[in-house]
Image (tube, rainbow, N blue to C red; front, side):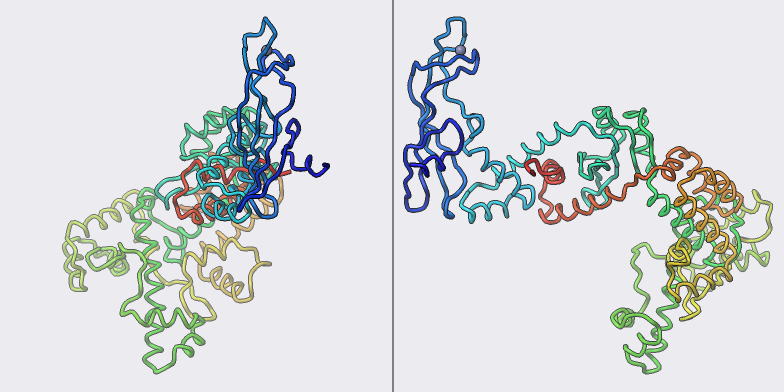
Amino acid sequence: MRTKSKWSPGPGVKILGVALTDDEWVVSAAGSAIGICPDCGRRSQSRHGWSNRSLQDLPVQGKPVTVKLLLSRWRCSYHKCERQTFTDRLPTVAAPYARRTTRVLEIVGLLGHSTGGRPGERLMERLGMPVSDDTILRQLKRDAAIAHRSNTEVRVVGIDDWSWRRATSYGTIMVDLERRSVVDILNDRSVESAAKWLRNHPSIEVVSRDRCGLYAQAVREGAPQARQVADRFHLVQNLRSAIEEQMSLSGRATGRAILSEDAIVDAATHRRRARLAHRQSRQEIFEKLHALREEGLSYSEIARRTGYERRSVAKWLKFKAPPDRRRAALNPTSPWYFETFLAECWKEGNRCGRHLFHDVKQRGYTGSFANLERLLGAWRRAGREQAVDVPPTTLKPEPVRDPDTGHAISPVVAAALCIKPRGLLTDRQARKVDALKQGSGAFAEMRRLAMRFNGILRGKRSAPLDAWIDDAIDSDLIPIMRFARVLRRDIDAVNNAIELTWSNGQAEGQINRLKTLKRAMYGRAGPELLRARMLPPLHTK
Ligand SMILES: [Zn+2]
């Protein structure tokens, strides 16, 4: 019967009969009438015995199919062959010892890749191919290992890090930028492991990486032949944070920082300044909202007048003090809480620690004299080194205000606007930018630099970069100078970023996919499984 041959799972299998039981199809079949020795390749018709093998195959009419195979065990009659007996092999039907046909395992691997273990198990059951989630995951990992072995010919790779447990441990992702697919996932973020990986892929010619020095070092060690490309997106982001730092440093307003670099570079000082600036602008918003509420206005009316969402207005009005998202917010035990007042005194020549301690206590300072002295000490040192008798102008907090709402413009917003080309600004944003340019010399200067930097990145020519770096260093704006110096240290990679088209944009996309997978697996996914699902599926045709 012709239909009988259609039941065969592949060549070399002869169908004997098909029977439908309650819940599955059972296909009885037999191997071929002649055996071929796997060692010497000679044919044998001398049967030694029989063996049975049971294989799960593709479903029929929604019901599972089991192929019961009767296979011969043959004797090899060639006298020089060391093998005495062998069983029928069915290379196109199933791997040795497999309990499922190859075509079922392909589906298992594909389904596992797109859905993961448990959901895959439910779906396979419904499709008439019941398999356990363990089997699915095992197949998925096996496929990933094969896929990985076959992709050693990477030429252009993008390297980036991703967070494995929120900001406590990191992994590394390698993306083939030409084929637009993930090549590998490493469990950690270290020079050693990334360098080792690069050494195992000697075909690599170009490596695109973020500005993190770690991967730069890894490329130097593991792929010295490759051209390094700094990622353009990260370059712009770093410029943006330098601008933000400068804006909070200078009270988001006027002038240049006159503190010596050492005093400014003190990281703790930075954090406190940024925090204080942030807190001040929040305080203003907070007070304004409460004042309006006291006038008897409704939430909606306040929202309309201030431009905030009604929801945020309601939230802010619930609190008695501005909601501060940082736990370590400044309070009157810290001398920094009184920074503005102290700076005023300092400027007027009132620099005696004991006197200032007295004055500041009157204003509610509850901290120690030693703490106050630490702050004053930094100012004294700054004064000595620079021989400048002016207190930090950073402490002249006359912030630039949004011409539409009258609110102080925060350093974060100012920095974001600073790097945005005019053509992309909304009318309101354009008014803010103009106000910032007028109110802050530093902002105006940084905007000129940022626009030039954008132009250079887009211009595909790295020659103008050198002059830009010089000008940025001449700006005397400390964070901008630092940014420029880092560019100079990494100049080759930055030049390549301008001249080559490669960027890590794809890697960012893949990291988003990875995060989604990680969450979908409820954080139970081990690194190996995550890796298996991130690599491209094996059996796509
Ligand atoms: Zn043989």
